[in-house]
Length: 248
Image 1: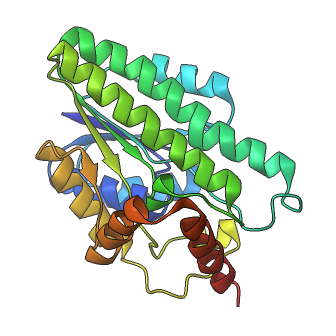
Image 2 (image 1 turned 180 degrees about the horizontal axis):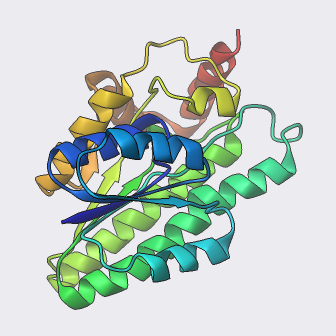
Image 3 (image 1 turned 135 degrees about the vertical axis):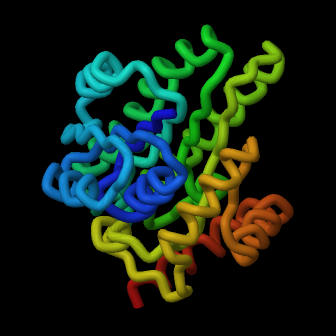
């Protein structure tokens, strides 16, 4: 059995690789940081292929697929965020974010899903965020990108169900996690985040048990519930104050 993980050089991607290797999976680990990937490879016991690649460049997504077609599990984990007023944040960074969080995930999901549907087996986990269920003032582009992932993955799940396909889809929507995401996004979470090790194990276990919507942590499950019943204007205000509190 073989799994491909994007964004595997740090955080939950790296810990997913560690856990899947313990379960006996061979791995293809993908990220821009080759040194970090090689370091991870050394500690893993199963066969590991390192692919140092920037997935914000669409052509690399096609190259990755051609290079590594034969997989059983795809985990689309690569992504990052950015904090600040929309009029002030860096446009180039936001375009790169959209290309990584949305375009790369879309391409890889489509290419690998088509093969899995033909074989009538396989699993895909798309990593979104609890942000995918809310508006995101002060992190507008990031929240919007995760809304896309949530909507896309839910729609594909329904299509697969109608086809009676045996391909399994999972949607991971964590809250704050103690990872390098915070440094890249220039935010400081006041609430204590879950460990990436816990989230990685929780997510993989749920995926292997064919769970679709995966939300680690009771607090984040409650947040999603209240986001469904809260008036939109109040939810926007709530999200704004949450974002402001991160940098106080």
